[in-house]
Structure formats: C-alpha cells, structure tokens
Amino acid sequence: MHPPFPDSSLGGHASMSSATPGLPLGATAIVYCEGQFGEQDGKTANGLVRHSEKYEILSVIDSSRAGADTGLFLDGTANGIPILASLGEAILHAGRVPDYLICGLAPADGLLSPAQRVVLLDGIDRGMHVINGLHEFLNDDPEFVAAALLADVLITDVRRPKEKKDLHLFSGRIFDVTCPRIAVLGTDGAIGNEEQLFATISKGLGRSRVFMVGIGSALVMVMAKGLYDDNSAARLAANVITGIGFLGAGVIIRHEDRVHELTTAASLWFVAMIGLVAGARLYVLATGATVMGVLVLSVLRWLTRGARSDRSAVRRISAAERDDQA
Image (cartoon, rainbow, N blue to C red; front, side, top):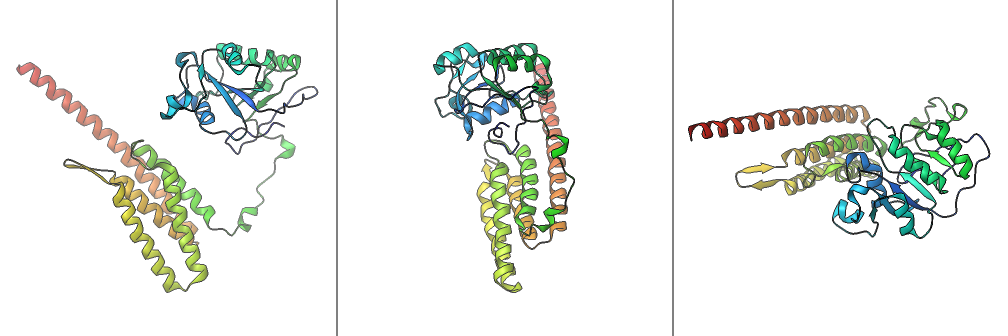
C-alpha cells in the first residue's frame, strides 16, 4: 500500500493483478494540473504546493500559466516551485525522472479527459508512479493497468474504498471517548464553513479562526467543570463571553457610513456559546444550535445575494433612464 495521500487522512489503495512493484525510496513528485492551477478544480495541486509532508513537489504542469512561480501565483510569496508547460519540460527541470506523477486536478465530474489520460500514461511509460485522487479509479482501467505492469510502476487510487473484508459495522466505540472537544470540533467547523462562504475572503475569519474560538471556549468550560464549583464555572463562562465581545468588536469594520463584518462578529460570539455548551457536556443542545446556526447563515447568504441582484438591477435601470433623458 502506498503512503497516505498528502495532507489528508485518506489512505490510498493500489490493486494490481500481478506482483506489486516496490515503491521508490524517494518522494520527489511532479503535479499535473493542466489549465486549472489556482482554480477550484485545481485544489489538489493548490494544496500540495503550499504544504506536503509526504512529497517533495518539484514543479506543476499547467501550460496556460507556464513560467510563473506557484507560490507567487497563489499567495503572492515565491516558494521556488515553478509552473511548467509539459511533462517533458518538468522532467528536464528536475534533472531526472521524479518518483511520482500526482494528478492535481479535481474536476466536478471526477473524470479524466482524453488529453489528461495521455499525460498520465506518458508519466507511467517514463517510469513514474501515479497518484490519482479522482473518483475515476485508474486501477479499473485496462489501459492504465497494462501500462503500469509494463513499466513496473504502481498506480494509487486514493479514493478507492477498502476491500469488503476490511470493512466493519458501527461498533459504538465512539461512546467510550469522554473528551468533550470532539463535539465542538464538529459544531464550530460547520459554522465556520458557512461563515466562510458568507464573509469576504480577504476580511472574513473563515474556518481556522472559528475553530480556535470554539475549542478555546470548550476548554475553558471543561477546565471549570473539572477544577472548580458551579459558581466558578459560571464566572469563567461570563469572562469568555466578555472576551469574545472584544474579539468580535475587532473584526467589525466601519467605512464611511456603512458597517461591515457584523455577521462575522455575531458568528464568533455564537460559536463561543456552542463551545461553552459542548464543554458543559450538553451535546444535544450544542448540535441543535449548530444546525440552527448553519441554517440561519444559509438563509442570510441567499437573501444577501438576492438583495445585491435587486440593487444592481435598480442601478442599471436608473443609468438607462439618465441616458434617455440626456
């Protein structure tokens, strides 16, 4: 079995019809992301060039953005990983054939196009192991299986589920886990996902900061319940609420006569309350509040989009009327 896919808890499963070739000792890799680097459908490649514990990323293949630095293109800070136009150019840049060719594409349909198949097959012919994160399993494709056998390389389908003999039914062991932080990890994450969609990317807090608020609040309550009496726990909870008020005030932005990021500030306060409730082991209440919060943010996002569309239509009509009068 190949080591887990980079930056993910998913494990890759490789199934070959004959003897499995040995894996390379190295971890050098080229990421294939033709036409999609920096886009939503290139999220696998985007993540790999930012951080990978498993692979040494040498370059990214995307002829439409060739010549750029991946870090500079994504985040404005150079990381020394270039974007190159072809697999041949990427191998020439590496100075030898790297160990892996990673499919960095993540199209909505999860399938390879004919042109993309050609590049991956070329990598196999050159002796590169292929890491495939798509929903299309290359080990089920006779052409890929035959090519891998001839080249003595391994194809890893990351999303392939385990064999049936390795699966098991729900055992209930999760109920043996007493740590209350497990509950808040799910609740604050759900709110963070919805808030990240609602807030602007540049100013919104997103998931990572929301996680910290929720987990921190839960830890305070766990500590208070474990070390102090109920009165002391209540005082600590009140201090958390006060502190979150200052934090929320810090994210609110006033520009001219308009105030921005009120939803972000309210979401921070709400997640902190969920953390306190989860820390007090009131899991049903915490889960219910999370569901309600996600629903409210979803409705707000939908209403906001509608209001923006209406305002845009009004502006267009007003502009047209002024042109007619002129």
